[in-house]
Image 1 (cartoon, rainbow, N blue to C red):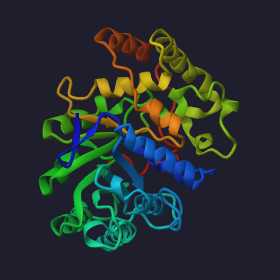
Image 2: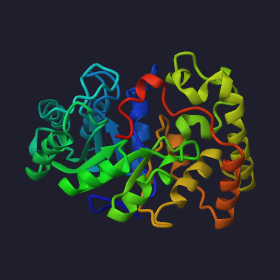
Image 3: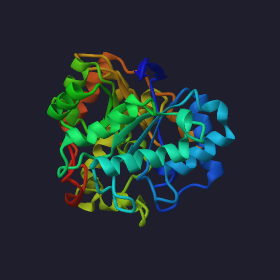
Length: 336
């Protein structure tokens, strides 16, 4: 059972990005139904962002309204919010103490919790990306002020390398590290991030564990991707590699059929199978979903045997993913 800030959060969390940061966000009633289903299913680690949408409509406004309607869920949910970016930009980081404080204050304004007018404590805060133009000591120091004051529960990191994790953890205890991890993206198993987190006892929060929807089987051909989708700009979804990458999905679909499950449930089971094994620490996938039914599906991952894992390992070697995780213009602030 994964723990965040010493609170058990189950084996699957819930990513909020799709509720606000997409071309066609769901209506609030639908979003609330999905969030309610997540809590009821034990997916109580919520992960959102000040940058997930516009300054006027992002995770903070949705969460504020949700916890006002369902105040009983506030104590159940462990909430992590990403911020530290310039408002109104596409996640452009500003790690200055001034902007980090602004970002946390914005979170507290909407959430409130123990020290504000709202009703939800901010359990974890993380800068979405470290700012290469600002010393990390300044950025982390600003967050630490709020932790020391009891306004934020702990510090989480996002898209950082093993050396940075060690450096920051030596400055201030790190409560979690958020990185991309899935059958679609296995980098952390080879670049030292997973091993470092295991050694230091830091839980990994695995975002995009379903490969941005690819591993659910909803896209069988390039034309299935909506024209207004951000996936149209992602290298792994481009026409020149799509047909090659779909081979991985088809192999996962075969396993899912054998187990009377969905490909997504196999994909989540694979991520969870790495938790606490071979020197790795706890790993918590945070799939996003905008419907109650998909939330419930994600809350029931398949438990995979060692034989299953060997089979999947062979598949990954046979059908390696083609293309980088992000477009070139978005790679500058990754894995610092």
